[in-house]
Length: 426
Image (tube, rainbow, N blue to C red; front, side, top):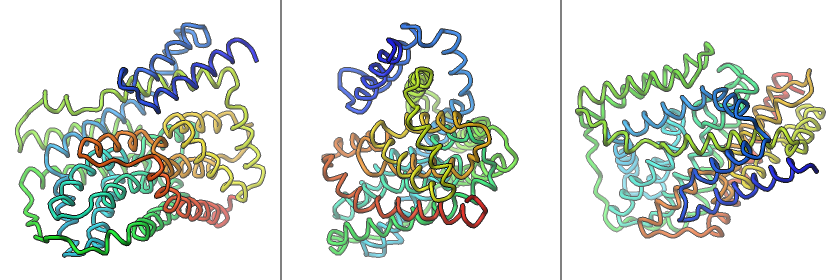
C-alpha cells in the first residue's frame, strides 16, 4: 500500500474509533472533522476537492437543517408529549397496549420527522409516561430506539442515510415505495413482535396506578400537528416530482416555524439552542474521510461484494443487505451509508442499481439495531437514559438487538428479494 493509503486508513480508523467511543474530553464532531481536515493536510484531498465534496452534498446538508428546525419546533409545541399521552390513553391499563401505542407513535414520527427525532425526542417523554404509571421504563425506551431504525425507510426522508444512497442512485417516490414498502412493513411488524416477546415478563405486570391522561390538545399543539401534516404532504409531493428534499425540508420547516410562532410566540434563542448544530461538522468531516478513503481504494472490497451480488440478480440482494448491516454496526450507520453509496456509484456501467440501492437502504437503516454503536441516534439515546438513572450495557442492548433485529433483517431481506422477483429485478 502507498503512504497515502496507509495514512488515510489510519486516520479513518482512528476517527471512527473516537466517534464511537465518544471520549468526554472532545465533542462528538471533533473526531470526524479533525480526520477530514487531516486528509486534506496530508494531500489526499486538495482544498478544492474538499470544497467540491462538501458543496456536492448541499441537499443532504439542507435536509439536516430542515429536519432539526422541524423537530425542535414540534418539540416546543408539545407534539411529542401529546403523542406519548395518546399512547398512554390507548393503553387502557395494559402495558402491552401502551408499548404498541408508543411504537405506533414512533412509526409516525420517524416517517415524517426522521429516526433521530424519534430516538432523541420521543424517548424522554415516553420515559416520563412510564415513570408516572409506575412501570419499568426499559421496554418503552427500547421501543423508541428500535422503531427509530425499523421505520426509517418508509419514505426517503425518514432517515438522512436514505438521501446519501439516493444521491448516487436516484429513486423517485414510486420506485422507492415499490421496492421498500413491503420490506418496511415487515421490518416494523417483526420488530414490534420481537419487542413484545423479549419484554413479555415486564409487560405482563399491571401498572401500579393507572390514570388515563386527558388528551386535550392545546391550540399550539393542534396547529403544529397541522403544520407537520402539510410538511408530510410536501415530502410526498417533492419525492414524487423529484424536487430536492433538502429544499422541501427547509421550506416546510420554516412554514411550521411561522405557524408555531404565530400561535405560541417567538423564542428564537431557545429554538436555536435546541438545533442539532453538531451534525454539520460531523457530517462534513465524514464526507471528507469517505471521499479520501474512496480515492485510495479502501472500499474496493465492498464494491466487489456489491458487484458480485449484482451478478447473482435478485438472489444476491440479501447478501448485499446483510453485508451492509454488518458494516453499519462495525463503523456506524452514517459513514456506512456514505461508503455504500460510494460503492454503488463505483459499480461498472450497465449494472442495474435500483434493487441494490433498496437492499443497501434496508441494511444501513435496520442493521444498526444490533448494537449500541450502530447508530449515532442510539449512542445519544444511551446518554439520555443515563441522565435519567437507567443504565443499558452494550451486552444487554446486543441481547435485545439480536433477538429482535436478526428476525427483522431476515424478514426484510426476504421482502427485498420477493419484490425484486415480482417487479422483474432478477
